[in-house]
Every structure is written in C-alpha cells, then in structure tokens.
Length: 299
Image (cartoon, rainbow, N blue to C red; front, side, top):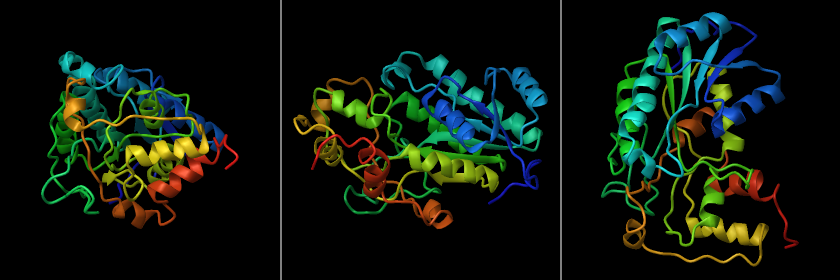
C-alpha cells in the first residue's frame, strides 16, 4: 500500500502543506515546527493547476498535505446554498492537487471525511460493526458529504493519494470553535448518538508518520470504538465544569433546526490500529489528550 515517491529513500523530509488558515493545517504546521520537520505552506489555489505546479517547483517537497477544503461557516449548511464554491474547492481543487502530485511522483496526504456513511441494517447503531475502508458511502444527506463521497471515489484511481477519513475532530484546545467538544457544549440542545471520532492530538502525528512510510489508499482515520454526545459531556462536567448541564433532543427535533441532515456512524479503525498498534480507543484518547490536560475539577 506504499507509493514509490521521490522522497521515499531520503532521510530528510520537506512537507508542502495546503490549508494554512484552517484548523488542521495550522496544527500540522505547529507539529512540524515542534518536531524540526522542514515545511512550507502552499500559496497556490487548489483549483489553479499552474499555481500548484509553481509551488512544487519552488518548494521541491518530499510530500504534500492537503488540509484545505470547504466545510462551511458556521457549519455544513452553508454548502447547501454555496454549491459551486463547494465544488470548486472540494472537488476540482482536490482532484487537481492529486493529479499534479501524481505527475511529480509525490505522495499526497489528503485529510478527507468519514461523514459519508450512516448507520444502516448491516451496520446497526450499537452493534460494534463499523464501516470499512472498502465500503461504498451510503450518506448523501448533505451537499458537503455528497461532494466528499464523489471525490473519494475518484481518488481511488490515484495510487499516490492517502485518503484519511476524519470524523467529528476533537483537540485539546477547548476554546477552538471547530472543536467538536466546544461545539456541543455551546449548543442549546444536543442529540445523543454514538459516533466514531478523531482525536487530533493523537492522530495528526500519526498522519505525519504515514507520510514518512509513504502509505496510500483509504484509511478510516478515527480512534477505535464510538463515543456518544452525552458521554463526552459527562466527561466535560467531571473534568472541566461540575456545574455544566445540557439538554438532549431527538433526531426529528434536530431536523427542524438544521438545513441538511448530519451523518452518524461507526467506522472500523482496525486497519489503522494494525499499522499503529499504540492507537488508543476513543475513550482512552479523550481522557489522555483532552480531559486530563484541561482538568479543572479536583475530583
């Protein structure tokens, strides 16, 4: 599952990263700085092929990372009314970058999404049976997810691309509005459904290691297991704010206050766990990387 890239036999790495202003792109840069890895943020627009070629010629990277994309502000409902802009970045841009990288013999680490599945009769909620890398996406409830599923399917043909299915990303920075925990603590009401999630503090360093190993193909990029909204909020109450309270509502009630349906699923992380046996379960990772470092209560 590796790709014989230009940088594969070199001891030194140089990363070209797209998505400087994004959450994951920003964290990636900080991670490279702290580890002494040479990196440069791309200045080209993803949909502009010549600007990407110029970046690669200037930087001469060993690997390229794509953390750029349109998720919508404040949420994916934005994509429903900005379809062309969503296509331009998430479809045209991502495919252009993959194609340029392939032409140059470079592995592209592409931060994608696992919000392209929903629980079904073969993957029942609570069954512990998660969707695997080779499963066909079954959720197109939002335009955002629809474009992401299209791109994933097309990228299967690019042997230089490593597609990482990120879900409901969480980090130790509880002040970040993109953080899933921060989001749900600020909602008036939350649903309570077990989901696969991605703890960035643990998984972003793994993505750098995946680049160094020239791993390619599709990867469910989540911690093993599932965690529900209420479980996370209970941890938040126990570790951060003992006075914190929240209200639940049903999917039917939620549907009245959102434009597009949301994805709920469990992804099978056994492929990633096989490559990185040290990978923690979602509950263990939440405690180690998020709640213990932020602990404010004496309990």
